Image (cartoon, rainbow, N blue to C red; front, side):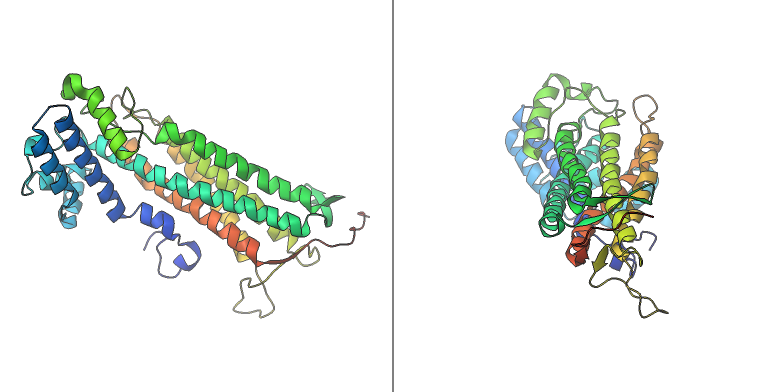
Length: 358
């Protein structure tokens, strides 16, 4: 296994079932079948084919048993899975081949599938961000009036209430929930541009087909394709990194607070050592720092993926496939682990005012 998110034992630290399921082959294939079925129905809806044949075709697509090995072989040859998928769909019993994929292109299917994935991912992330923010408030009610030594540039400065530090944890989380919600109109988009993004192959009915499909899939219809306009996806990736960064700040704070000699934080169930039985390592706090640094490095790759050549890029587009799922898994995992970390806290700060630095 190359990915730590699915490794047999590293997965004990990195696995996140919610994001794994979203980006799994089964889910991605289901999305593609939903899109192809919606397109066939749209053709019947606008009169580009018999409505009963369009419905029969859509139902056959939705119930199709797909040969995954053929998809793998086709992707190796074509560089994208859709041609092999379309060949199988057109060969299904009860399908009218003229009502399958005609006027679409592979990127329409892959990008719309991504939009469906990001729609569900945003639901998960917002729920987890809000849970994490709520857990900070729980800590604030429990420990907020206690005081710790405030530190600037990692040096003792002046005492502060823990509520002050909690605010630096909670406020960014609330902002991230708002960011995610605000970005929905820029990433939950139908892609329907056809071979070169003009949708000319769909004729005068292109707008009606787009509107029908968008409503069927729960996405937004747009007037033009975004085949080579990836700023919305890059912006979303940047938000993933921002969330991880805020979680990394929490993790770093707790690592430093837990140091012997500082003793401002204690945990139940920390990580053990193979050589030192007395150790209680802040594993989850460290993990949040690792995840933040990972996403910070990955977001630059997503900005490289903004550079498309003319009407479509194979190189930039496929770079997204390598990077974005891992960024999503990283962010989703961090939000789950920060709540787990908060629940492990047994003490923060002290009822006594810390002494002034000498």
